[in-house]
Image (cartoon, rainbow, N blue to C red; front, top):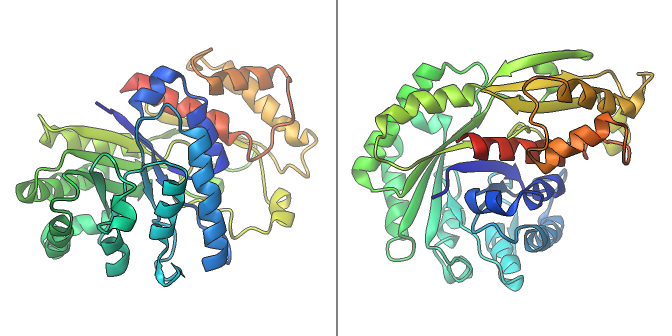
Length: 355
């Protein structure tokens, strides 16, 4: 039975992090991917993106029994051939001989949700498992959205019989963990009275999209992970139920580089590395890459700091081995993007061992 669900953008570093997991860990993880949104995306560029993403699933997901894919970040208004773009993604996956678990939500258009129950997508689905994703705003009252949820459940009757209820807290930094857990308990208790969900996933992240919101340059912080407190407080109400812990690893769910001109990226970038341990994110941030005398080598300096910490997990994962290598100054230059693959891999490995 799966015990951990990392929520990831369907991008190169995230795929690489999964691919680098050990065979044993791949069997235990059940990733949840969000298709990435890019600046000025239209139907043409979205088609190209989905074709590329499906090939990445083919190349990187061998050994992972199953995974969910959602288009949460893609505007429902972008249609491909007059149909929801989610259908086109399914066709791309079908062409690669791949299957995935689909996702519906009450915040989607009627057509977008309905397409999940049509042959265009059901032919790609093999496990008959589907996720219903709700956000923190939905937790205010189950009764307010009950009819919408029951409608989706009815549409899936005879098509999907393994429903997973995903409670997505998104960025939950500053959220009152006890109050939110009480909302989750009340919402899920009411939802379970209507339908016997196969499992409940509780996910979220304490990481805001901008690192500057939690620490300044040339500093470090041990950030308490509020998503863990919310989960621990909520699960007491679900004894006997299969409840899965989820998180957004070391990347904020609201992070997007689509609004930053690539030509200006280095002008606004300071090295940042996130390393998770014992309910906290240890975050180290350097100075501006263009202005600091160590430039990109700050990543090597930060790696040296991390591996010297008592909580560093020597040799526990490909990601940890990468940090040891960089601390020794070995290999290629570390870039703002290339640090993500190993640190996401380290985080996933850690959570799988912890749970």
